[in-house]
Length: 370
Length: 153
Image (cartoon, one colour):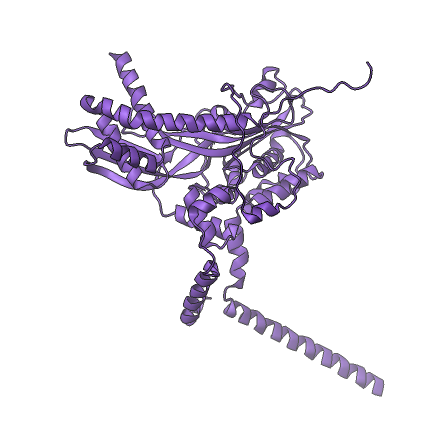
């Protein structure tokens, strides 16, 4: 039963005013501009876009400021904003093979067509804090090197030529991609729906699950076939134009994980795959997503489901950090009536317990006296 | 005739692509420099909505939904009757309005050349040089492997 209790309006209003003040902080420090966040905290912006499931750098930057840098709160804000907008349609599927590549590495082939392009990576840095950054010094322009626009085929295509790797995941021709923003989750789910849930899933949760597979909880012997980051063009079919209308470009990160597989009576031995694709520059998340995608295909390959990362219902039901934070954080909201009922119950149980104890002690005394 | 129609469509698509890729600031600046007319009747928008971005499983397999992106669209009609459309990522309504007018003006044979030379060509040049710079900066981080010979034989 819910009982309405009034009160607290003034406290709430004042708390929000205080929040606004603390968010702004010391007024003698210049206020952050959104373009500063977009340019200089770009990977934070990317995370909010990926898990907020909305590609819009400025909105993500606004959400980060409004949330005082609390990423999950920022993601929540972006998710809420999404629901206010009409939907124009589904884009044509992006072609990551035609990406304007900013980074592309493979751990499986040294010399692959298009080469290894390190791009703007934290890899090989010494992870030493840089006092010069704190001082705000000038930064040199990056070097340039003339290059032909080499074709950069996905690494999976190289292995596919020998038939040593399973093909890209096909589904039946008339399969319409599922959409978790339109239909409730149902288990077991098709791989396309799982990938949608993983792509907007919590980076930390997916990272931990991916890590667990490496530590032996559903080990699947992964190699990074390829990670690529860059811009891909979007196109949308609309009734008013006789061609798919180009919308501009978004930055995505793609991970092709190549995994061991012994084969079975039906399937010859070949590599299997896990796939990761996320908004923005986030190879940690794309890799974790690919590890989880592969682990979640256990039943498809007749593997025993023995670990958390293979349990579809467990993984998909808990990967959304907006849902997770909503349910965990609601615990701090008033539960006075619920708790009152529990309190009454405990008091009654305690009274019964005490009564039993007293009766027992009285019995003991009586026996001792006799 | 069919060939001409296909060519026209490909050209128009390239114009729309250029406008969608360019920033609103660049479009406004060139628009004002060129003195292009910005009067038009709005048939729709400018309005902001969402598109759901699709990827493919494994890169080339069955499509799946990745997430959404903001898109702003506008449809305009010029006094001379041409109807122009814009769909572009982001929430820039001024950009959507001018891009839709540019698409309409481009369809008017008497204005096409002006739109091409004063607006589309400079935008394309800026986009191409930005893309080339990006490519060259990435190319500078390409790993050139070499083998070290160790020992006598």
